[in-house]
Amino acid sequence: MNHDRIHAREPAHHRDRWSVGRIASVAEQDGHCVVTVTPEAGEAIDLVVTLAVRDLFVSRLDIEEGESPVGERVWYREHGGNTP
Image (cartoon, rainbow, N blue to C red):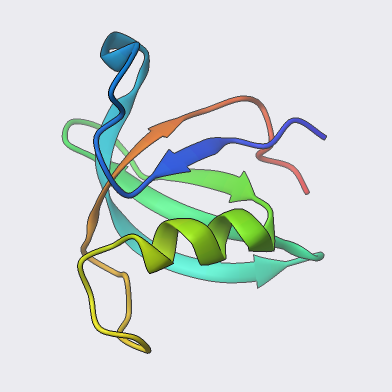
């Protein structure tokens, strides 16, 4: 499966390849994490990442431990992992 990419901080390289959005929801589905992101312009997108990637990017957000990441800004790239 090709997973999508997501970062809590602006990438330092290839910035033109990344889109910016805000997290609308985070859920587990079929052993993966589905992060719904609302881009600055456009409709919500479901990104599929591993649970380890979810843990990593959430830990890098500027939120308190246990606080919801909903509403936080992230950078993402779609890679076709939208069907777990």
